[in-house]
Image (cartoon, rainbow, N blue to C red):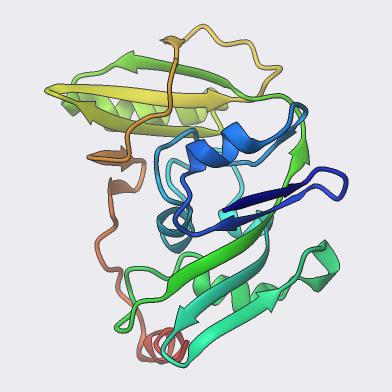
Length: 206
């Protein structure tokens, strides 16, 4: 389910829709700040984003959220910026995989922004060179950067602002696969991070 309100610049999207499907549903002149991936919105939100290099964290563009936690379904935030409950959103967006009782994202209200699609380039990169390539892309101003595997081949995808001058790589022609994915933080899905007892108690009270 994807419902776009172009006038007020937001979209209501179910957690099982992919980032690629969301982008395809947006009208010209509006975009959602996320990498062009075949990754489900729920997985991307709970991971706190994938491929971030010089882009803001996902929670800055989440206006509202409906999720199912340990105590049933909860709705937080709203459909305009003034309704956003930042503290609650920060507990959910980026919470996985530290949760003993996993949260499921039913839907999210996402802030859309005016602008053209980013420049997307990619290149075949030996596996051992992925970390260095991502750091080079970070230094060059790429918004997102991640590696994905197709067969035995690793490719690194980068996204730059629409008005950037880019000489690296070749044009990316389709949304990258979400399987065997890596970014500057390592493999995706993420390994469970170390959390304090207080953080674990808060997260598992959701």
